[in-house]
Length: 107
Image 1: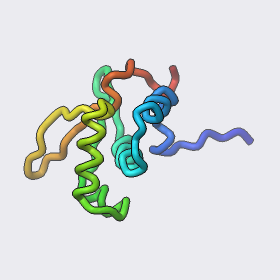
Image 2: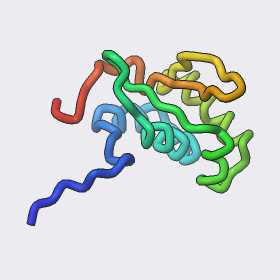
Image 3: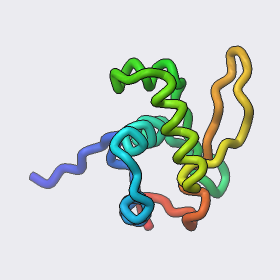
Image 4: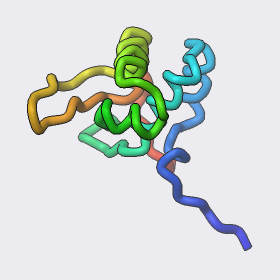
């Protein structure tokens, strides 16, 4: 029986994986990025996502500072682009892979 597994972590496209390898992402950076991708959604012609730093730290069993450092590095490397500022009751939204052409899973 051929069955497609639907998983939020299966949403990283092959060109993205190749770029992550070329950029030399650390394990923590990749895990934080995968958490953000797990909440990825389409917004116009881009993919966006978010994950609260406190929640990411709990899920990954690391400190919030490590999550912040990973997000900063991912932003500096061009893997994430911050689209808004955080405020009480509002999460930061990131564009995922802003330098890559927009693709959907069917392409």
